[in-house]
Image (cartoon, rainbow over all chains, first blue to last red; front, side, top):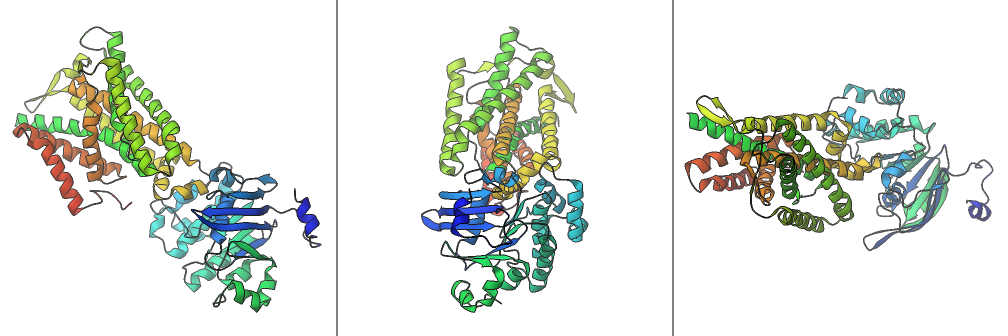
Length: 252
Length: 294
């Protein structure tokens, strides 16, 4: 099904693996607003793809479309060879997606342990949970604490841990650094870097420094369209591209 | 003294009946944001299902204990299934349209209540129950009908069962998480639709159970037995705090007692005190006694 894509754009020599996730001409509306106007891009297995763009460019909407939380109006979304557009969110997630939402969205009234337990799907192993606790030892110490009483950074750890307790094919992470103090941002991005080697990731990140430290590939959205797709170094080296689509202060 | 004991125990039993209705309402509202106006009709159907089973199997004015218990179980299951069908068939298509949803539950409530009077005539019918339930036990000089104690015991059992369900089971966890953020629950790979059906059926089953005990409490069934009690159950939920089961239990006790004492000492104050209580709580503590901000 990727025949047309392959004939149109010859793949680089090292990227022979088929994409784990492929969006083709995805259109989405929120109410009357045409938010995504034909988005196409691919996520290569084993790599971290960063979605960049100004506020309102459609980054979060793209993630919500992939998860089925906002069903696309038309277009194709293929995960590991299976078309998932139109499936219900829980069914899509069960195919092996871990999701960390924009505002963390931990369940404030549940304990840390309950948040993680709720996230465990059938097939989640205790070993896996132990690995997550190794990565975030703080969460084991605070297992009995209500998630709502944690700091923003700790809540972000819970949100990330929730996506890691299952064996997932793809991690979808929306602005992990948003609203966090610089010290905490460093902590969170270090935790994320620790899992980049073993995971495929689709990451929305406004903080260019964080994006650069984690990302392999970049996709830039502007007004609901893809305006750039390529290695992230290319974005870092292109001041003009940054000024045009990411706005001043993106490096801050 | 004996009057006070009698009024207290009867008031507690009345509160227990309100709680059986209110606990389901609160559960359903907590997870699904649905104000279920059909809940009174579920109560009525519980009462009539039990009444029908008992009167079909016995012609005496009292029922056997086994017959009563069987009717209790069957009525609970029948109404739970009825609620599941209502949720799947009528509510599910309307989750994005809350006003329509309220209208639908209101309509279902009226239709189901009307149906009982079409099938079994609109007048009140005596409800046969085991003789030991209508006999009295003397407590501090007060002769209290045994069904009052049974009702109180049932409500306590339901309260404990609900707290266990909410705090210790996976579905309970889904309900608590779903009350906070439904979308995130879905995004964790959980089928929220199925949880909704289960919760609606559970709430409906509790209303059915309450209906059977209500019929025993009043000694008769009639088509509006549920709608009359539903009003007080809603007040209990609001006073106790939306989504708090313990709050509902506390409010049910307060309202049952206030109503019972008010009705005994005056001819008019029972319901008035309840409405006054509601107004005072809404003014002083709008989120209810134990409610968290929703």
